[in-house]
Image 1 (cartoon, one colour):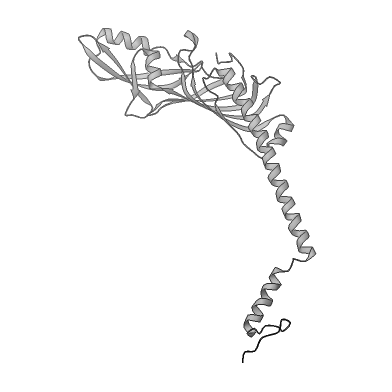
Image 2 (cartoon, helix red, strand yellow; image 1 turned 90 degrees about the vertical axis):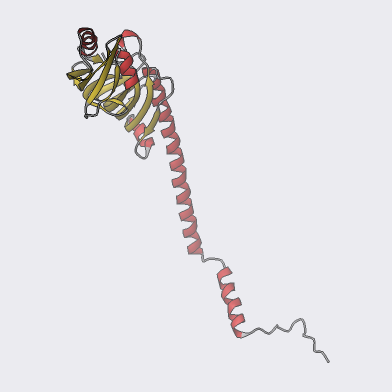
Amino acid sequence: MYHYQHDDEPLYREPHVQEQYEHAAGYASPPPPARRRKVIAVASLAALLIGGVVVDRAAAARAESRTAKAFQEGMGTPERPSVHVSGFPVLTQLARGSLRHVDVTAHDLPARGTARPLPVAKLTVGLDGLKTSGSADDAHTRSVEATALLSYEDVSNALGLDVSADDEPGRIDATVSLPLTGEVTVSAAVSAAVGNRIAFTDVRVTRGELIPPAKALLDRALREPIPLRNIPEGLRLRSVTATESGISARFTGKAVTFRPGATSA
């Protein structure tokens, strides 16, 4: 004969099963009030911090956009340069009216007529103490360090010679071709000259015969330093280096301004 358990009779559990149920029930119980308040406070602080970062990042993006527009308008680049504002928070820097440090990278600064004969393939600029005026196309900075890369193709077009990197550091090769007599190649050292110009010195013949016509062409191309006027006004050329990808020119400056038509003399 079967025995049926009454509804109000507790089911039998093994002792260890009973302990597990009680243990699980303890975890399911709500945290004490003090702990809840602590969790809420931490969550609120995290939300404030995240919100502050988002707002500050939006302010930095606006400052980067204004700086990019000012640079593009001032230098005539075909595309907006990339701009990065350093430091956190940016909002406090904007409140003071000066950004601590800004990095700008621009490409293909164009040549304009005989006054700007040599394009700049790439210009990287570090700006300290950048202040912007009410107009987005006019920006001022306390000090600047910049590097301009001049491609060998552009240098060749400007000089009328075939210019390339030399095996010896700090030097370039320049080749002139003449009918019947063939090619003549010389090696020349590059250096910074007064007036933001690149000078070619210590010219040596490395291949071919330097007959008078070839010598005349090389002298005309290399005798006078080539000017670099396609850079922001206020920058001064400090050093020049010949690299595998082109001629690298380093500049520094104080109180530099970016505005339409503002290029170095």
